[in-house]
Length: 353
Ligand code: GLY
Image 1 (cartoon, rainbow, N blue to C red):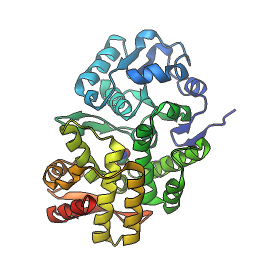
Image 2 (image 1 turned 135 degrees about the horizontal axis):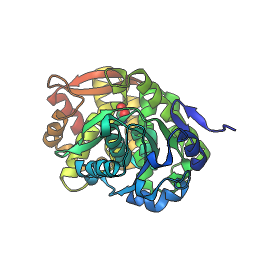
Image 3 (image 1 turned 90 degrees about the horizontal axis):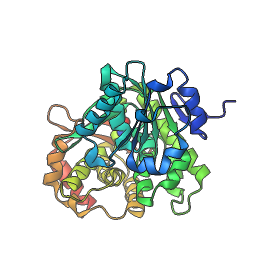
């Protein structure tokens, strides 16, 4: 009996073993490979190991963390696949947070020009963003996701019980991407997310909110998988957010991705007011919601030079202009909005007065 909910290749899975049995049926066991990160291996493996008789030597456990999202670990996966005889008919199953699904996906889709892969995200951030949409990659020269390709996973399995293994910081980091989904596409979702009690979480409601957020992402990606146009909507908050994240990493005080995006959404809401007519009430609504959940924006937001420096390296830029997705109202956005240095300095000043 099929009870799972699906949006395209993304499935809400209550029983990973059952779903993996079904979804891997076309692959011989010795052609199935699994990649974990060590913390996920410790806390999540019992829910995924044993769906078939995958040989132990086909399971690889990588080092976790953004610092390890690098070419050395990709080479480790390639070496492993090569030694174990992986070929074009093999399947890679990535189990972990966004770092792991990005890296494992990249290793899979570059090995022998591309193996199929399944993502099983174990963090909220990976569930609502990284694991879906086919962006794979690694960091390079201090720049996030500088090297990578877009290739859609064969399947993505969302398993809610993994969220019980996460601390509040981790949950909040993913929640920022859900807030973003509401802001760019669905006012009602934004209102529901604002009202949701993160300190006493109702798992059923959270599941609905996650599923709605994934639905928005999937709709956008299906329309524009290569990010030529509308997919850029998903970048709201990210032009400033990525710069902030890079600067924090550079300063040795890493800021979780979602926190950086959340603070970026305040700045970009102010810019949206200037350039796209977002109402002052909506700017205050966004600012107050972010500060209530994530605290005050960090002091580094006062220093616009380093942030502008990072923004110039942003993949989203074209012809030397810094590119934004901005809101005209909550639930509706405009892509390809260029901001000049003075405007950006000004809105950064207003974010952290
Ligand atoms: N994280 C934004 C996207 O997948 O396009």
